[in-house]
Image (cartoon, rainbow over all chains, first blue to last red; front, side, top):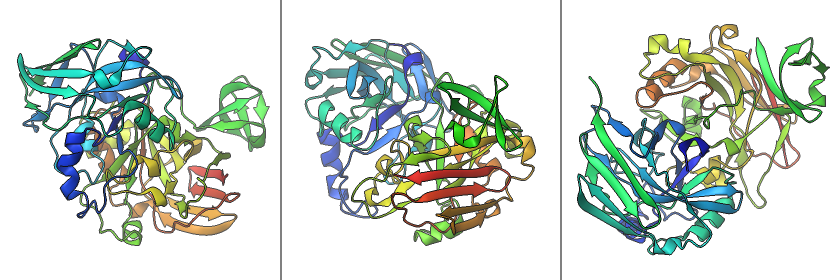
Length: 206
Length: 248
């Protein structure tokens, strides 16, 4: 799995049950007015991609970075998942999901991409468990048996309105309780069969 | 100069215009209707970043019952959404409101990071026309406009031409108009943008690196109407081109 083979990388909002339930009380209020019906997606463009081991620059204007450990489906062809890869979907913390989060999610380097592709054949995504460590301390554990839409359902519902082609990737979502980190911190995400994804956050040069 | 990318007799070519025909990169000449038009963009090694503005004309923001935004409302699109001049865009069955959006599109010419407004034009290679269709039935208030509205396959025709920036001396004073089956339904001028081209290059490059071939679709003015299967929609911008699309 190399970054060079990726095409468009999509993220999925509110796909972990705990995250969805935390938002549920606000869903019927303005500006949202109703819970989401179709999958809510966003794009992590190519300027955000960081390889395993790469340093990720945190701008001086950003105090904390939210760590969004997840797994992405990588497509082999339309309708066909080639495999699964670790991703670290970094964000500048933001309180609203009303408008697309471009200036919070599309900063240079703000998507760590693992280099291990777990082939889809024989993989059971519902058994994926990720551990997130910051400077060696375990800060979050995610279990992918707690999704609102499992990968198969998510792909079907997304494919109803757009085609994911070879090299396109669809992240399965980030869980509630995402830890925050700052420049100087080392982030390590790992999961059985998925390998590990490590990135060092570094301060922007003055 | 203005350039296109077309498929002619099974092969992809870059082309320029000569006397109302296409001059292909192998020296042959082809009529406009003898080719299949692609977006007028050279391929990029990594997928291009496609930024699009919402509510960037005061009159359109008013039409949609929003107050003008204080910072750009921006969303991203995938390359699956793009298609070329003279192509067809599907209207999903059973929807009530699918409308065009005629938009001046900036094509980035070189890596842009932390560019100042006063230098922004140095980073623009040229301009093209986008028709950024929206299917309003699918609007939800989560990351609005959500991708189901804005990122469907082939719902963003682009072209016909990439016009060199040098040939568009004032991109902030161009007439735009859209016709549906020959009748004018939308007209405006790029001078009425809330956030203009230099501002947008400065704004985006303040937090992300723009690369050659990346696109900024700058939003649409007042006057969007529902389009039905069979409708021929022409989105046209002075000096840049007239982009034709058919609803299927």
